[in-house]
Length: 121
Image (cartoon, rainbow, N blue to C red; front, top):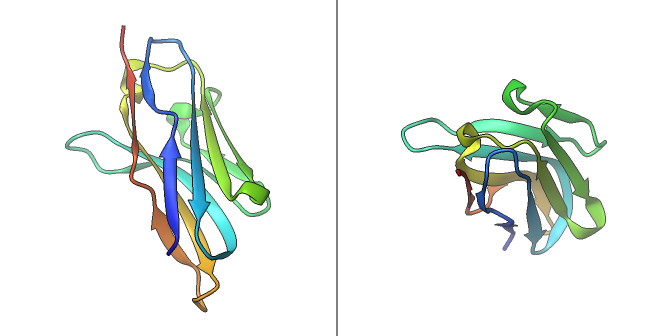
């Protein structure tokens, strides 16, 4: 059973920083792309940033220059360093990854349970 578990959310003042972590566990053979999404009530989930197996990164325009995605392949983990946080960054942040387990021929997309980030004074 493959699982993604996020951590690092919380309450922060505008202009502050948070670092989200996401660790994949289970009988993992390989992980290709890893991503961070976010969602607010009444809105569709939106892509924040992604990183490929070759460490190529991509960011949504609304976080460029403020957020940084990185990964540790040995730890099956992905991180999101969030600086210069704004109230509009308030959302539930979800980790997402394409994972091939030892029990499957194909890679499948997995989601974490989400972690709340609240930016407020």
